[in-house]
Amino acid sequence: MYTDQVGDRTLADCNVLIVDDQASSRLVLETLLEETVSCFSVNSGKEAIEYCRHNTPDLILMDVSMPEMDGHQTTALLREKPACEHIPIIFVTSSSTEEEESRCWASGCVDFVVKPVNACTLINRVKSHIQHKLRSDFLEKLIYIDKLTGAYNRHYLDDYLPRLVKDSERNATPLALVIFDVDHFKLFNDMYGHLDGDSCLWKVSKTINEALLRPMDKLVRIGGEEFLVILPNTDVDGAKVVAERLLQTVYDLNIPHASSEYSRITLSAGLALKLANDSKTVDYIMLEADKNLYAAKTSGRNRLVYPSQSVAKNAKGLSSGQKLKSLS
Image (cartoon, rainbow, N blue to C red; front, side):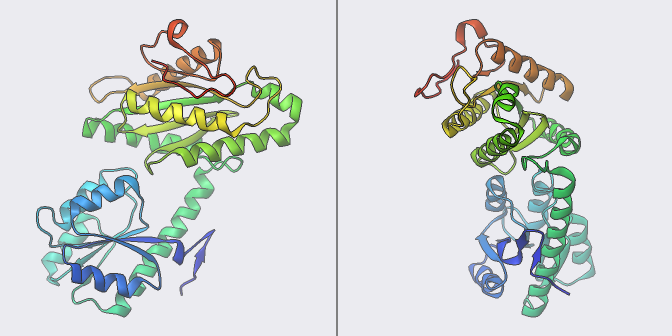
């Protein structure tokens, strides 16, 4: 039995990525599903991987036989990415042999349909797998989401970060961590009350989440008024750009704070980086980011401190009406 809604999402809210090198096949699948879910189509495995770098579909319909990179190879590459490993993939194949079925299951699909596609079978299998994912997402939200701010919580951090580190090492890509702290938050609570304090944290969290442009970038509340932003596959220059944008976005909220030297809510931030070829542990990187956060707070707040930066010489804060500039 199907229901149209699980938690706060409906089938109409869900997105299906169709991957097929034949335009006619893509059109057939889109036409069959258009009244049930939103569809987006690409014509190769390479385009599918690029699409998933910036978007997280709820389900993927993957053609098996494609030139250059077939469905099995594309699925293997997607499964290596933490942000994509739980996306259900249904293979669309022209072969119904036992050998091909075995290959499909071994590649990590959740199901497969045979061409020419039976409309009733396709629609109901898509509905079934999306609803299963919606239920899983809803349970994950209950476990991993901080109820006050909507950011991820420490349980999520404990499960997610080690996998990201392994992914970074395997792909030889950097991993950036940025710890943020709301400046003078205790004074804000004392002056405006805890209800306004809770509202402030919610606004800050919502603003940061909206300013993170990639689905792989995650915001975690690690305690009180302290947050962590995880930036996979990001070097120090890229992380600086993101962190400075987040500081500026919260500054532009202009939440009044009479006890702050900036007369508004601001953030201090510390950045640390794990390179693929270094031996630093996650705990060490977190400690490094925390030390840089402390340096940001003791050097005037409302600023970012990053590796190899001379705090006394280079750190700059914002004054009223001033835009955040590079701190290098």
